Image (cartoon, rainbow, N blue to C red):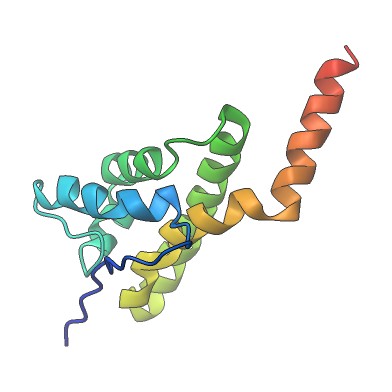
Length: 127
């Protein structure tokens, strides 16, 4: 059984689409040129291949400030570890392919990300 997740191109007035999600089709196209579909079963290859994974996380983190980029990369690596641990028992669920794009959209907006940025700013300004 194969499930395919394609990005939806919908034009709505007054709705802001995340820049991370708007870049997802071009990121997917770049990986498809290498024979990997990140929005389908190809995500398992990305998760297992360090080079692909680092490239994918790098492309997803474009547009973030350096502190948030480092935090996002750490969270992405933790997510990857969990995905690989779970996959050893049950395989990679097709919906898992959306975990990193959704993390990219949600994480910079979470209170923990903002608190972390503020604490780093305060520690730098006190020096």
